[in-house]
Image: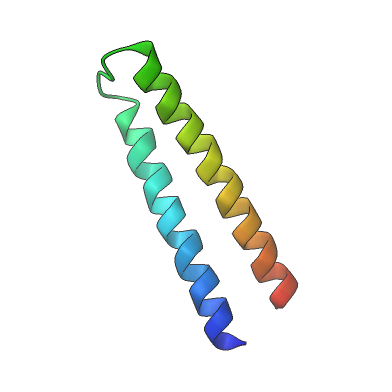
Length: 61
């Protein structure tokens, strides 16, 4: 059980780091609106992934 918790925690932390990286990318010139939209979609997808992983952790604990 502890191994599962560690694995889920690691996945959640990796997703949070990726969100931070993509949010920092907002400050850069993304070139065009398609790149901006793709970046925002990726951020929203990762937010959902983090939320799901955190809910899984709560259910396991």
